[in-house]
Length: 347
Image (cartoon, rainbow, N blue to C red; front, side):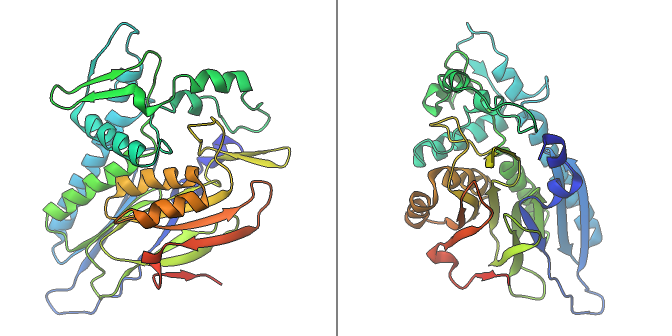
């Protein structure tokens, strides 16, 4: 599969999670809940916000504010805009010891560093040099061992020093950052905050599979969130969730097959190669930025180490699907103890 095909509308809209909004409204004269759904292209994906409230004016204003918050994060956190804060960091001169950065980017970097520390470096925003080596286009050669060694020489979250009081960032020479593994989740959290502040009763924000729910469905019960099958069309199963966040990392999102082996975009910062042994990891947490980053980290850890991490970390749950990079058969589905009774496998 080449890179252009991975950016089709189908891949963007349904690559990680399929949100099943099973909302059935009871008609109440003069107070019937209204449901408003809008889509916009942001963060390199299709972002969908569905909000529910009796007051349509509240809905429209809140959704506009939520999308504005996402658009701001998109503008400052991308590596691919010359005007973004991240590009400003990555294009600094070698002699520039400190870079003063955008407050939102500083907040994301601070949380990224905390997650890097708690996961032993399985999540690391300094992987930009590695990410640039792997294109996943058909017919393109794999990176050489020498290229990977060179890229690894400037990978390591320990090479970042953030000065919260001054707003300055110190990076080792030639270290570049990539916030793609956490920025979408952070943007979803900011949209959630806008909707909640506006007093919206219930909502679902979906940024290409990074999803956060506000409140509960008006008819009661739980939100029903479908998890994509990593090798087939359709669903692996359905999660029942409340006011929570969910994100999935999968080896089917961006990949290529070469000599019968699947090479995908979830790179192990310790080896420079795609992580092995796992097909997908779905993380459930309160905050979406944590779900976003931890889905990558647990994928890199592998099934056994990753599930041990999940079970000992408060407020984190997971569904881990294992399988070989050389085949399409699922070997095992591991479900953390906190999701028992909340995950229903599809037939």
